[in-house]
Length: 105
Image (cartoon, helix red, strand yellow):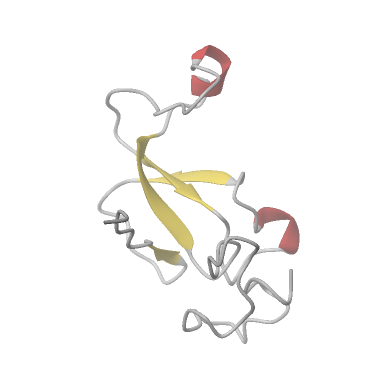
């Protein structure tokens, strides 16, 4: 993890600029750690029990959104793409962020 993502042991106690560490096999940077990334999906505690197997989109509505990937302040075990947390859209604190994605032309 230390070569690919920022977490509590290597972050210096803060969010770090993107692309300072090595990218993954797909050329994506900071997919683990650094900041919990906001997702479009609404959070449903038991959603995966009833969701489609392929490309689950989350419940149609809710009061909190999904956060993924862990943050600079977390243990290594939380800094993975499968880690899910949640937050209200109005929440703000330093380990939260987002990934700007642009579709291929």
